[in-house]
Image 1 (cartoon, helix red, strand yellow):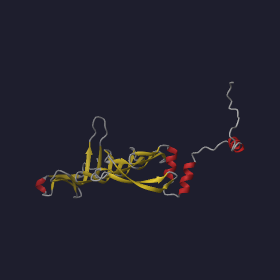
Image 2: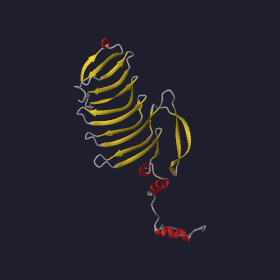
Image 3: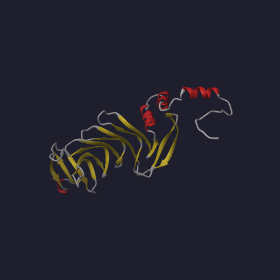
Image 4: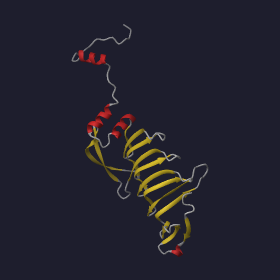
Length: 232
């Protein structure tokens, strides 16, 4: 375990008037602090043992008033990195990355934590034909403390290639078609023409005969043609 042997001493209230209890690391740093109100504060190392076949893990990060805050990293009990998550107000916020047991990236998520004191959020509404152009802003109430928001990407761990991309807006999937979503995601930060061209790549061109037929009969009210069916 990464931290099992790095903790030398457990201190109680008698050793410090500021903390109810805490741990001292080998470098002399103060870890796993609990204040006089019983709240976790500052840098922490959390150890979860293997239970009923479920793999255990360790994670380290920072607590503010008993809530996770900022960057947290999770490891297997063998020391392999499993996840890098970001928190705000104790909820996932921003980019979170997940790895297999070989530390290959397999998934990247995007979250938005909602301020518990103000459960309303302002979101931009973009032009359907131009994802880089904002039409207006809308104020919405968010019920969940943390919602999917932004691009989610799924990777092939062997090649690192993006296999699937999703775009979420406050827990709602904005684009369901994988190919179109990937095109939009790939066009992030590029000019509108590039984004439009990428989205239009999925369109299938009409056969030459169909184009000529439509051109020849353009403007006619009724065109007789044979469709291969039989009957009177």
